[in-house]
Image (cartoon, rainbow, N blue to C red; front, top):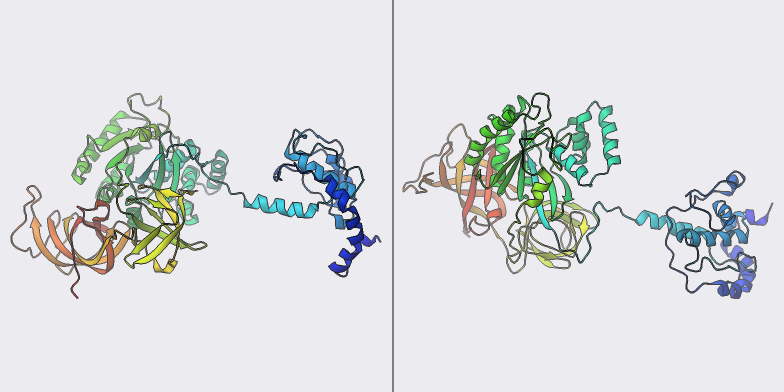
Length: 586
């Protein structure tokens, strides 16, 4: 047996045996070094490494990447290369090195790959170790991340960031429209969607495949119901949009409130299919509740997408479209939207993508812009760039440190900035900043951020905490006065009544400790006497006491952190705004 084929007793012995040969060959190896060579770039299309055991069968095969062979037979040698320990000749090794260089640059001449290598002619042994090269290549390949969005060039002006929440009754088609938009704007590849379609077909759910782009959870896919707020993003010519796909089921309304509190713009999806619109809109349907909650969460603009217009029961009928519109407008007006300025209706089909990007020939009566161009043409939102930093935390987790998610409501944040986490007053430092999965150095208001923080543990943060600038902290407390409108409650509400408060991203149990006065809906006048109770559709000012300390501001100073919803027994009982913070008695 060839002594080189056996494993050595120890590495020292092996090295000592080869030492004289190596030292003799050193000057020759240095002479062959090309000082002007280009830096090594791993070639991802390089021929596959074939072990010596199957050398004979692979010897005659053409190169795997299909390019013309620049160095003739040396390519074949490169395909059948084995490491030095396995007994390959030194000339093979040199040829291997040469082909790597040539493979990287198809021109062949550039960085010294085209020069004649003394090692290849057998004058002196080569100096590179192919195994090390392969290890480096593998590491390099693993490290290349696949960005979902091509990072924008530094010189390009920053696009306005808009958060869009999709709301509406369960099964209206919110996730499907979100998935279709992502496909139309190129955020999801056709191949991925085809895979989803195959998987959905296997489960006899062919029409669900588009929603799987946003419903990534297995439970959500099996039941066809969104549970958590799905996140995705897409870009148009002028704007960068974050999609917040809210759940429609009444059991998950608290999640929907969290999604709506981050949005600038709401898209209310309603189904035009006979029976489905009526179910969503009648009492107890989520179309009403979601529209009201979106308004309470601070959404000013509402686009109503009348979905499933391609359904056989509808067939792009103008009468059905107008019928849905007539029923919705009075309710949306009552909630507080201005039909002329704040609401925009449009027909569409989420499954086929009709009227989302391109106009539809079947629908000649609709003359407005399709959905995506309409979003792009919206006027810019006013943001408080110079205001104090306010970032309500939506979620947190551990990933090489403490990571938090949230929407920056005002101010700007940059890397290495010192901030304070309220209400616990932890001083934290921003280690890294991601806006929609793309790393940036600074972020402005309206952006959905993912931040890695230093100086705080993940267990010490709760959703509803707020990141503030150290020189301007937000207010915290347990007792506050607020004006509330009772929307739906069967019996009367008296002092001592408990409910769940949803304020920005914070969820806390509160108790009405006192009713201060009634407010006349039309004139706004306050009653002189204290009411003993309030009932449905009445407006009153009451004093609330929370179970724990919460971060809030008065509605007048900072509307996003001063409006709230009260819920009880799975229903929205009241909406309100914070008027005054009551300092704690010592």
